[in-house]
Image 1 (cartoon, rainbow, N blue to C red):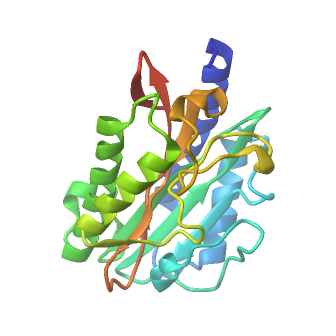
Image 2: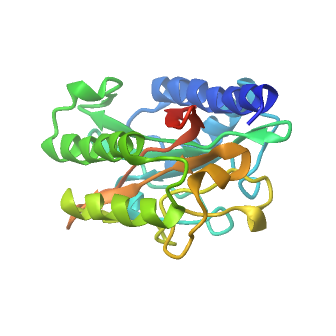
Amino acid sequence: MNIQQLKCYTEAQNIARRTMEDLEQYVAPGMTEDQIKRQAEILLIQNGSTSFWYHGVGALVHVGERTLISQGGREYRSGDTRVQETDVITVDLAPTLGTCWGDFARTIFVEDGRVVRELSELQTPAYKAAIEAEFKLHSFLLEVARPEMTFEELYFSANALIDGLGCKNLDYSGNLGHSINVLQQDRIYIEKGNTTPLKDAECECFTFEPHICKQGGAFGVKRENIYYFVDGRLKEM
């Protein structure tokens, strides 16, 4: 990845970060999934996104038990499920900046009628356990990923950890992330059978986005970042 590419993709990802921060201040009990989606897309444009790369969808939002659902952009339709006083919301953002794009997902937790912005302050044990599993997965990625490691090797090792954490991979395709090629047909995935080395991904970077739930859990959680290599070590964009 050259300096200009890194700058462009980083800014696209920062558009998503700023949008998520703004959205956390907006979300409140009683709002519908569709309201949150529409506001997220307004905020993406306000923060600098020029379009939405994921089939024209800027934000995939799921509320409550619908956080267990995994859908592609073509199939996604926001619903009228309302945020409860204590609830879970997954938000996956897809901003575009010129020829670059961001891919950024977070889980928003609501407790006692307010968004808990510091995850260390979560009081609901099930919420804490689920998001801690997400953090462990991302920490694991940073520890084990090397340029020569294949996408398949990462797939098997990360899924083994998901199982070990007492969780289930909810992704509709079973994968855990993908390269950041502009054209969908050019993207490669963290999936079984993909023996491409991580370093050979487009622009030498890829997303990692475990969508998981605790076994038998009533909600799902998601956390997504873009990662790239610097001197053989993985770094979050």
